[in-house]
Amino acid sequence: MAGSRTSRSTGTTRATGTARTSRPPLQRVTRRPPVPRPPRDNPVRRLHTRVRKAWDRPLTAYYVILGGSSLIIVLGLVMVYSASQIKALQLSLPGSYFFQKQFLAAAIGSGLLFAASRMPVRLHRALAYPILAVSVALMALVQVPGIGVAVNGNQNWISIGGPFQLQPSEFGKLALVLWGADLLARKQDKRLLTQWKHMLVPLVPVAFMLLGLIMLGGDMGTAIILTAILFGLLWLAGAPTRLFTGVLAVAVLIGVLLIKTSPNRMARLACLGATDPGPNDSCWQAVHGIYALASGGLLGSGLGASVEKWGQLPEAHTDFIFAVTGEELGLAGTLSVLALFAALGYAGIRVAGRTEDPFVRYAAGGVTTWITAQAVINIGAVLGLLPIAGVPLPLFSYGGSALLPTMFAIGLLIAFARQDPAARAALAMRQPRFGRKRAGGPRGPGRWKTMRRRASAARSSGER
Image (cartoon, rainbow, N blue to C red; front, side, top):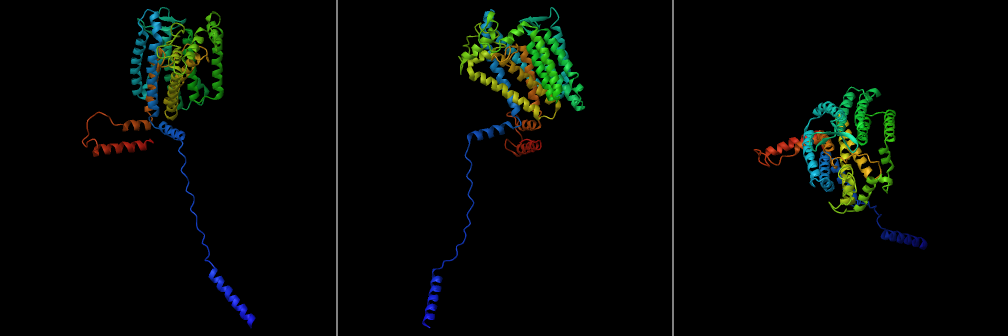
């Protein structure tokens, strides 16, 4: 009995102890998900995002083409004045003689640029055949004795009175671009470009006719630019690789024959990478172009302080103006010129890539190929990477015959950039700074309704 009591009391004690010391069951606490930390502010990424958004705006190509070409022309006028002073004084002319002629050509070219930028596309297409006919006629007149004028061994000029001369082959570039673009656009509308004969004929025969007229005067550099324009048009038209390679092989074969048969061209080819004038000073111009670039350093010797332009560097204000730019403005100046041409070329590619009009695509691509190829050939010759071809730096070197058609071509690009639907809507939203006040006042309901209508039109046209 005692044992049972003891066991009962012990059991009771255990039960009581257990009841007293037991704790309520723990409840599982739900943890909150960790709050993600904001990404660190990367200034490079932020700058890249801003630049990308700015480049995707509808009017970016329009402003880049207009602003870039204007800066190149203005800087070119400054460098023409600096590089041509000594040459003018050596010829017993005023120091600003060449600058005045270039400024006059730039003023006339500005009118052509403005007119071309305001012309509708159908008017550009209508001008293609007249420009081609006039260019062919003028290039034929160059070979007529008494009319054609030879300069530096090349008979590619026509005297138009007084000190002014005209080089018709420069207008042949513009003629090939406009006529070739119109021809390919009409054949694409009729779905004929899938046949190789329609892609080549009559584009290639007419281009070879222009090349033949140019080579009669011995201008190999302009012929190279025209060949580049032809291949650019064929590439934009979607020429098959075999067809493209075949035409390229024929062009290279003709070029090799023309170089082999000319001692002057062979001598220029031998000056690639030369660091010494060589026997009989055959590489004098190429070497002194390198000397001018090397002496410029990072920031240059100062505007007007070039040494090479004092008779050491031939053609300092025309074909080798880039060398004088490097000597006076240094690496910073030359890189600025390269950046402007790169921006201009990229904007032209954007215009050609975003349009749905085949004529605009071919014409914009042809103009971009023309300016880019000519800039590469000129700068490559100054750097000693390419043979000296005798082509000016577009929009930059001295020469009105080269400046006028190039500025008209820039007007074409500006007109094409304005034709984009989003660009037209963005231009329409711009308010005139000066004009009559509306009845609602500057902040009245009349202006607000007008802005709403324009904004809705911009959204419907695809503007971001």
